[in-house]
Amino acid sequence: MRNVGVRTNPGDIANQQDIARWSFGTGNPSDAAGAQGDYYVGSDNKLWSKGASTWTYTGVQYGSSGAVPEKTVPVDADILSLGDSANGLQMRKLTWANIKNAILSWLVARDINWAGKHVFAQNTYVEGETGVEVDLGVRAYGRAPVLHGYLANGTKAAPLPTTNNQLVLGVGGRSWTGTNWSEHSTAAIHFITQEDHSDTAQGTNVSIVCTPLGAAYSARVKTAEFNGDGDVINSRGVTARKVNAGERGRGIEIYREGNTAEFSMVSTFAVPYSSLFRGYAAGGSLSGGYTATSTGQGTGYALCGHDGTSFVGAKAIIGLHAADNWTAASTPTRIELQTTTTGSTTRTLRFVIDQSGDALATTGLLGYAAGAGSVVTQPTSKTTTVTINKQNGTIVTHTAALAGGAQVVFKVANSYVGAADHVILSLTNGNSVDATQYDCRVIIDLTPGAFYVILRNVSGVSLSQAVRINYAVFKGSSS
Image 1 (cartoon, rainbow, N blue to C red):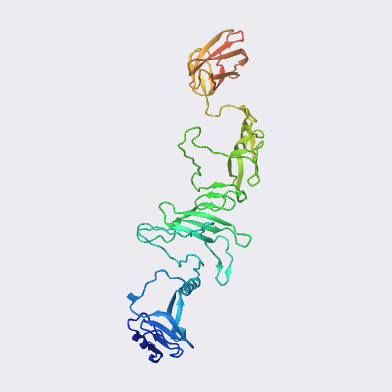
Image 2 (image 1 turned 30 degrees about the vertical axis):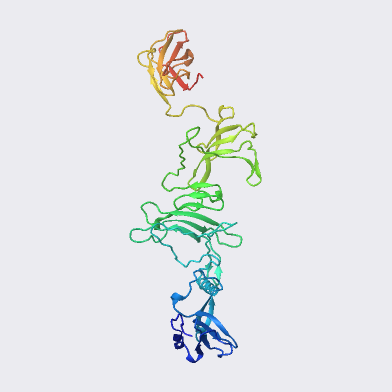
């Protein structure tokens, strides 16, 4: 039977195959009539075929297409008919289930098989002018939908293992440039293998790639890399820890080439801190439960560097430590400062603020650094006011004579001094001056900005010398 289709005149069918094998009537055919392979069309336009002994309705009904009832939702058992090209175009029945399976087989043969799921051909896209949303999931009950990317080397018939540094799945966005779509994604999420894969080794990273301002997609770089050890590497193109691969799993690394590596926190919260950096220290384990913080545990802020050969560990640290074992009623802490001196590579503890608030220098001296001091020479006489606006320094007196047993008082104007502050004075030998021949004391002015020096000659004879007096100002409080 050749392309019968829907016919408005049953007689047209006779033109498709040997007319002798066709007959027409007003009712259903009689099994006693006809021979195997014959066809019969009744007055209701239904087509029958003769088997070995009985007639079978083929499911085909001829007539005007407008007169045939419509079925909008086919089910697997529904039957269609076709001429079988492999059997001289003889009539064969085709179910809706047959059609679905044939389409699925066609897709499978082209490596686009999501058996039992939605199926899309390669480079399929959905287009729209007012915004398009594509739901790649399914309505799942008891288990969430998952989007997977599958990658094997070799061929479908002979697949080979996925190897190191291969893109397993990418999700990105392409933009319209004014003349065309960008050739590749200008920003994307990449799932990239980190080793040759096997049943026991399947290390994979997640990368975020972005295109810098003023550049084309070809200049895009990896701006963040997440690995299975919990590292997050923020950079422009770096995919592994830059400093020391042995520190893998330490956490976040920010890497910049030719620019400041910066960590910024911004907050509009006012009290007690707008921004706060916290480090938690505890005993026990993440899986087995925590125990109390113990003596010495803490959080540190460190300076590391490069010695010309390789990166080196921390050479200066500000550490916040537990001063003793913690309990629900006692959580003592201390602050430690460690530095490394010139000619050494070993850190040394220099300064501690203990749990009682005491400031303790462990090596070196407490004092003011260069830039905090100055020298002033007194003009005119030993009672003339001098001005020196530094936290510490040296006052060189006038050489006017000072009788044995006599004393003078002069004012030192200093903007750092307050009424509750403390000024320490000390006499120094120098310029042929024997400091043991003098005594000096200090008085703080109740009006901020000055203190007074009392200089007394205790030698018993008149002296005409430029006396050097060192001073240092320390902040005080009256409340």
